[in-house]
Length: 66
Image (cartoon, rainbow, N blue to C red):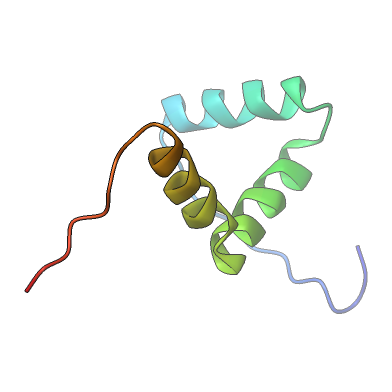
């Protein structure tokens, strides 16, 4: 951790904690590293872009509101 890094605490439901633990283990990362990666993907829009591309691939179109 560098001086620029900030520490924080969060309360998360037990099922989310288990999901994060499992995902971190699967990806061979610490829980902290996995959480940071998820948050960065959300911040950068990577998750939304991936979901959009997956939807296009699977034949779903975005609905537009008039």
